[in-house]
Length: 357
Image 1 (cartoon, rainbow, N blue to C red):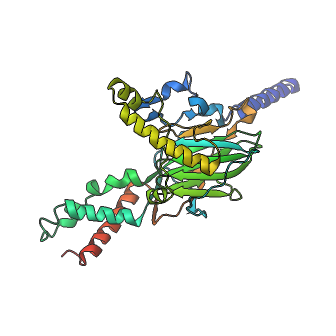
Image 2 (tube, rainbow, N blue to C red):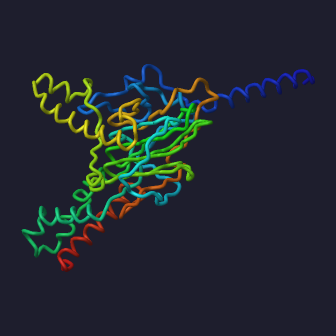
Image 3 (tube, rainbow, N blue to C red):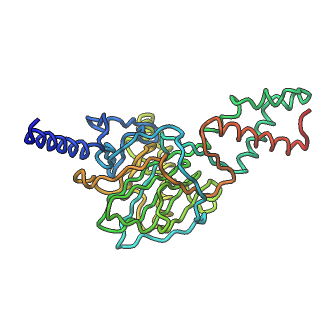
């Protein structure tokens, strides 16, 4: 083989290598079509499974247009490490400054469940009392097999969905001003933070009816949190979205001439609007991003080219910080079921003051 041919082969090989390298981030199947078609309208808003990003003005974007090496989340994936979030559960937040961009996100929850379960002692007590009240033990206290009958996995895992934390990817591309993230959820959510180059996050406020956690959170960012039904009641806040015409419950109320229900919901929203403006100095609906259930949201514009794409970090490759809870279980359904069953039974035994024979 002559030297010229060898050189040509080497050059071609190098070119192929460069091409493969430049496009190696692309998955084998990039979605096509309109991502908006993946949303389904429900009573209280839109729902989308993992693989569609919610942007501002109710827009929908494919994740591959924002991040490279995107991996569709898997159910009950677990982080590499977990620690307690060092942030106080508070009613007080600082307002958004004029030199900041308010990155307002509101989701009901996500269709992506993480392998992290969190719940309080109060929930354990309530569940123990419920089982004592409703199950066969009270009517047949001499049954030596009551533990097996009442506390089978089938009976005990009904709380799994409530205790399982969901997670939402937050892609931040806003670079003209520092971003003050205001993240609100109606379910326990892990906010997986992804920021583009040159993005500055000046502050994070997170509000949730249930639990709060963060993945890939820069420890230098100030964080304020408000979570739990009892604490929200103490702070006199009930986070809700503004009723809109596209929401099914609004449409049905109009058809059935049941506008009182919508009027009541609008009143609830007005109270939340006043609270939000008082705390943050901005409206909860100004450039808000999010839907009833969505796994990914975009704060900022869509990247202009491939060089501006964000590297995707799935939960399975992340460290998380979780707001303090009495019980935190990391693992799959079986791990949770065994632990949850054990502590509820222990609570029942404590209530009874004795162990069954």
